[in-house]
Image (tube, rainbow over all chains, first blue to last red; front, side, top):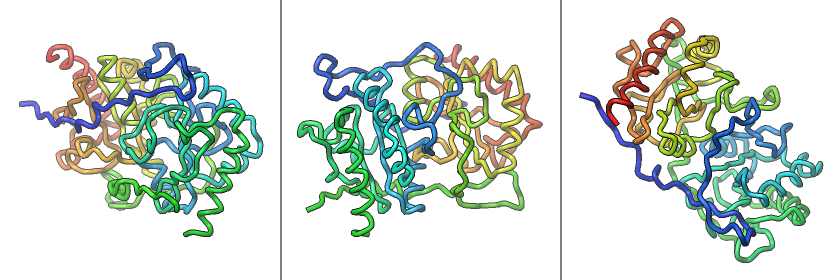
Length: 174
Length: 174
């Protein structure tokens, strides 16, 4: 007889993701693309090809803990114009790209099952910092009170200073 | 005051992974590499650059369920010679590369927290099939009774026929 072990039910909890700040988009399901991507697919997904990106949340947490670097997690979607615009600003900002080297980096197009990564909901783009003690830095926020972890391209300097904050507070608090 | 929300304890459960069949290696911890990889890093990690690879387990399950394709998960490690040898055999086997297009594909160097993915332990290399109903196909095994989901390069034809089995049983059973 075939042994069947069902995967955890949490796996069925597929995230319904909304595209932040897009008034006309609202809630939409993560969409599967049928077209083949340009090969080979990269872990950077365009957020900085020269940077080292982790593949999964488990890997990112492990590396953050063991390297004592803060973790920066970017949730985004290919079909979200706000994500695309922020990605462009992020990838082209030389100081951000340089500072990003001091972080363990992860960009995700699918939500994890850890609700600590969505303190005020699941939306994209959404950027969260986690320190090496594996504490989500919910205090590091952008300018939008309804979506605390969203950034627009015009907020790129705030994002830069938040990255500095994540590095600085870590030094003084840990 | 800084709001701290601690990530789930499961995150601390970093997998101790053993390299299958390596008598002299035994249990070893997943090792962090300090050297920069060749850029850009790819999702294929060398298992087939022309194939489409998913990034995370959550994404893979979502795509399997919605595309009705079986999911093939390869656990491996860069520093494991058995993983490397199997990867080479897998990447160079034209029929396997062709057949792999019919699967949702995921290769992982960090274990997930789903214990259904380690029916007889966490070791590498280890290949599991999951059907689109999200059932782990624990019945599709290799030749080693102590590590049912391990394959050596010389088992590449068995792996190929197991891939056919995963596709065939799915059609008749679902």
